[in-house]
Image: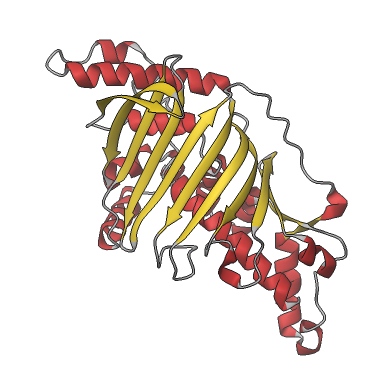
Length: 326
């Protein structure tokens, strides 16, 4: 495999890793105890009127967003120096496109500073498609020239999970895939779990009148909301909490702005890490828009797993290592 191709593979895995950094904590489905019952908010203690009102708004926003199943999105993600995917430097990624949920799909274009350009000759932009539970990443014209015209990297998370042979790994990989497209309904579902959800006040977002809400979750609350971790034993969950706290992760903060129609028009999500705060800010529009996402032609794609197997074989054969291009 040529060095340039290896570097572009590195860029692709960096992009996926940064998305997954937030996705891993977003497996709440909004259907845990109480969330599928709008009366829960109405039955909240009278001593907490602000919390009850905020809960009602976010509950309604969750239901409407889940039913819409798609939206256009513009997103900015900031990664501090030393965080996963930033190659030791702080970086910012910008993403725009369309996403859908239930079933999960997306077609976005990503551009960034040191996050995408960390490998030296990384592409300035990268298009990412997710459909039928498979991720495709456009590797650029240079990669295409090195790979006999194949320009799309295919990353089948379910196949990777099955190959691992570990039930816990399988659950986490496939659960992470379900949430990698930053489904706003699941973001709202997590916010419903926040014990300190509150209404901040009215604000304008891109000229649209909206109401601002805010809440946060502790490490324990994040894990409780993450359904993909249900395969772990209590001991394993306790160990994970201890490691996350030891690593400096303290909270998961969410802010949302809901328009007069009950849809979120903006969401800010932050995760505190030892290296600093990973921050995602997304604006949404055109809920219910048709998400006509299609996979690239098979002749234009190369499979990540197959490439890694060939790379492994070529490393065992020094004479073949230099010539391996796929």
